[in-house]
Image (cartoon, protein in one colour):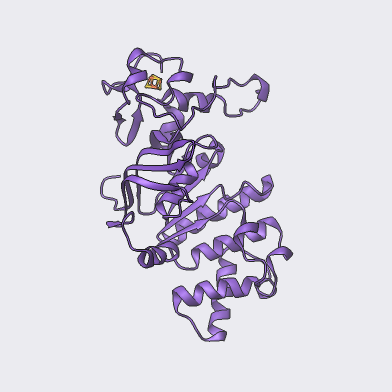
Length: 332
Ligand code: SF4
């Protein structure tokens, strides 16, 4: 990525939840850089910290959680210490988020036109009624909604799931953010609509020049949509590589397990290998590798020393003791 400018730089990010029962470390030292016009997929099982990474970037970590260490820089501006007013302006104008379920993110008592109009007049400073309506219709046309003149008068409950998600995308893009975060944007939709929405997102990101962080548990989705993939496990990024490289040369035992469990043509679901064991308890701090209890390649060092992040080939990073020497170990 040399020569490209970083839009978002995260270093050593830790987010913890302070519960009566103990401290849950949801993010445990995340390092992640997203460059201009780049789409990065964040993959991993439920609870690995994917969505919490997004909430931390936007400073929307719910109570009783908070960022306890690390840095998040948006175009050089430190977000972790930014005052609330400036942070509010970053959310929306610079970084926008598309949520999993548009039904809960749209306001049921306002029409599509009202909701889009409010965002556009606020961020683009368009106050003339006619000019605003034109902008709202253009925003709906951008996300390929048919009959936008009719749709602006409709309420969210009158729209299909796919249309609601398109409206959400229009809302997110209407303030021309340079960074779009999409958290499982197609989970609530049926398979054919999923494909359409992903194609649309990809095309819009290319057209508007935004960068995108796409959060999903579905490797097929990131393979088709993203330039680069970060694999998360138990609050840590364990592997980070360009999409083709990751699928060709998965190098962390967890990524290898995820890819072998990925559905393949002609192989029945029941015949696919599974990663043994369960995800660890995030209330127990790890001294070493968080995957140690499930890893077939675990060594003595893995239990007590955190694996360093090693660049195993240009732009391909792995956090695993197998790679501590910086070379591809035998058998992976
Ligand atoms: Fe397995 Fe050790 Fe690598 Fe962790 S550090 S993934 S336990 S080999």
